[in-house]
Image (cartoon, rainbow over all chains, first blue to last red; front, top):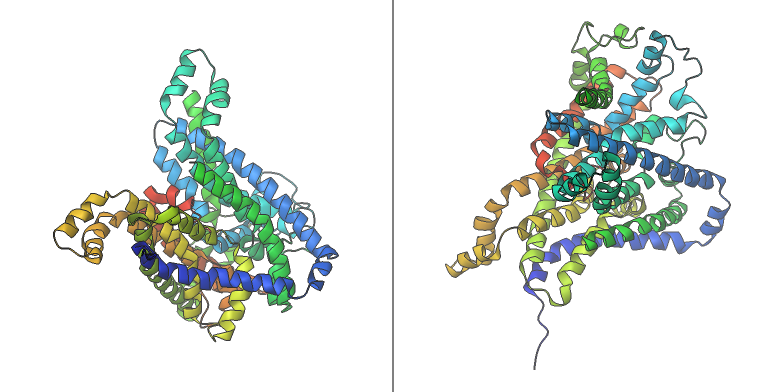
Length: 276
Length: 273
């Protein structure tokens, strides 16, 4: 008779599985139970204008920041890759914003953005601009754009880093062959480099996109979601619902919706990683 | 000529990347009258260390700093102690029906959970266990946070070491655990160090969990301490900038030490909490 033997490797893995079940799966089940414990939360969600605003702004924030960070990150990666000297110097320096504690980065930008005494308006005034209308994070209409600018500053380096690594991994032969065939730089970029970079691009977009959807730290420090609800995002609204108004059930319902949204991202990510 | 344009463009990008950091540094070193002077003073101001004394001498930032150090060290040690054996198990043993891949994917997928989803249950669980406002409670959460990352990074490093090496050692009478500790771990030491650095940085930078789980002055971490000052009505910019500079220094030092592994680490979602 054959007994089913538990593989030895399983015992090595068991402590990790136990910890992750306790700290990740159990809380997830708990959250789902909280979310569905009172189905009235879902009806409330459907009619909640603040949630609607937060969701739309989160989507806008994610879309604009992701597009800008990708284009700038790719441009920087190509630029630095084309340098012959000081390449690692530029690379190291350009990564700094992403490494800072997000709280510290946000504090720096509060010093920069302040309309009265901030260095940004100060410098613009110095070179002759009228900055009276430039209220940055304090303005109802400019606040969302301002926090997007901070995110672009902070996280373009992430796209830059991944895309640089992708560029370096491309073998030189296909590009050489295209050049011999008489292709110009733009054709080479579009028809050779970009297709070879595809999986890196996908991975970078998914990783950054997942983080953008859950954006919290920088906005919490910069605007706290204000003025009014101008920079309210889903994460901030969940935070406030749970920890300012102690409505844990409703917060869980909203986080469940957020989870469903990010699951679409991570599903795709898994597939990409498998394919590699 | 064309090369010159490229260097100018790259320098401009570098300037934009570093100017905000530099400005924070100058604010932390300026006397209060100069901090918001017009026109802005980029260089040549009278420097003072007064704000650093205010923040870390008389203020509470010294204790926030100590909390952050303890927390990062504890949670990193725990994540490595639990995660390295798992990585070894997934890398080294025969698993039926590719269970190693399934478990590996599942472990990674727990890292993809948005923190805001698990934070409400974790808050309620820690409240139940009376571990709110304690470094132990937050260290437990960070351990769970870093664990998937440790397993994935270390599995990759173990996979790069041929199995024959420890098989030879075990033929010589070395036990499984002995060969891991004495032969394999020394071989993956750079990878282990890089993994530890990433865990330290994640725990050091993390804000959301710390904000919610440590609310008392004695349990706050450095980012939470800084944030609690930003949202006050009257902000002491000098002391806060000084705290910010001190908060970012260890990260920059550690990251430059692990630069080689940055891509591998970041594509698994390190640094950003």
